[in-house]
Length: 395
Image (cartoon, rainbow, N blue to C red):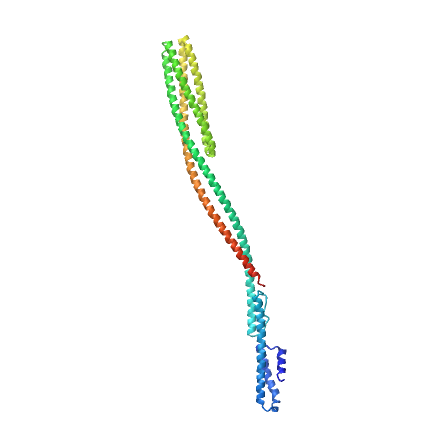
């Protein structure tokens, strides 16, 4: 009955920590003064005082217990909400004691943690976006590397074909050089033969003593000249064939054979002039034969025909000399073309080796690009996991 007023007062004041104890200590003297008037009525006043002090201590202990329990429950509620991811939860305990200080520090920690989670969430979004862009860039790099690899392989095949073509051109140039050398030798032989024919015609011109001997000798020499003309015609045909083959090889060589095509055209023109000259020589020889047949009618006419034969032989010698010089010029040009094609073949081999090295590097780049794409995809997965982990927090 004596404790009920103090307990009611404690509940009304909702005593907390040190403030509750202060109130109790202030009320204790008043209670003792109140009991002083009642003590004479008791037989053992000390026991009453002791009981009162014990009751007062129990009340203080109960007040302190309830206050501490309420503070701890308040803090535990906030901590539980934070542990479940609600970083917006706060402890509303506002007391000037240690529990109040813990509540303030807990709220500060929640705010800082929320700010940190917010920064981590923003960073996770940026990492996810950057990893997506990196994955897309890596995919484009992989596509480019694959295209570069295919292009390098195609270029390597093209260079190998060009090397094979250059080798064929070099072989054709060597054959053309041999043919040109043979044509030059034949032209020199033809020149010597024509020169011998001219000398013979001069001897015939100086010796017109016997018409029979003259006709017989001129007939034999005319047959020799006809054979020489056939030889010259054959040389012209071979030279024309050489020019045709050279033109074909120049066309196959493309841009590298343009100069060789010009030389082949000049050789063809020279062969045509040679053929025309041999035709003219053949016609002249037929004329000589006709004149020899008519020489029986008169020595003078035979002498004039002999002079004409000498003149024709000199012209033929000059024509053959031109053919020989043209053949030598052709040999020099064909030799230069052969050297150039050999150099082109060597360069083609080096180009093929370079393209092979480029293809190997392209394959290495492709492998590195695939590895970078895998790393970017893994980074994107990690960023997504981090974003999901952060999203469970309520800020």
